[in-house]
Image (cartoon, one colour):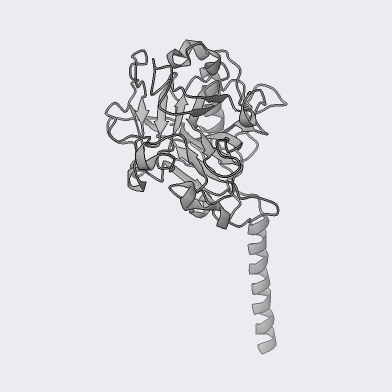
Length: 353
């Protein structure tokens, strides 16, 4: 009897191990979402700048409309016509239509930009830290894997948002749920492992280790935009700040809001796609020899002020089709596609790590 019981326990243990092994090797769950690459090897490779981005300039068509020079330098992605204009600070929605894009989906002619990152000491002082990739994930409004109820709406045409607080003076002035730094998705300091830091120095990628064969430690920034809309847009013709949303808590004209306990707050009933932007730089240092162009006083370059600008100048019918096909679905697989040609489909539904 003891022998039979031993065999039964052994068989049970083996079965459990087989189930565990099957779980480990099974394909990872996928999230239905739009995935667009606008810099790096997966971009359109049409951009003139670093990693085929759209270029670098001290201009800000959202926050500093009507001012030829903005408060700090930005690196641009997406729309390739903006920086070729005589006065990009005075660009209007119609000016952006039909341009080429640095993105792998050519119908994504939206404009994206953020403060530049440069070396401030050492042999590369003054040089841009090379961008390895820049991409956007557009997901369901509440970050669920799919939205079979079809609640997620496309962004309204001409929506202008700035996520992150450009006026932050310390970590207390920033929200790590909106902006955070880590060291690569397959490093020991990955955001998916809960490693979310306020600055590159706090992330200190020099102490990260690789979780996959080969170099995986790259300074990474992730920015999340709000998903609840009031149904109105601000005046985009006035001079000065034309944003419909600013991460600065002192800004009083926000037409967008983040969810609260998974729900849109009162006054912001329209649910739009969640935009999550990801930068990855070819940098593995401790953060002390680099700085962002944004910030004032003691906070200058620290990372507290890192933010991202998004101007929705997508080809709107394409964006609407992509949201309906890639997000408002009950399908949960990695085979959904949306795009212009079979050779450049623009994946949606990529595996979630």
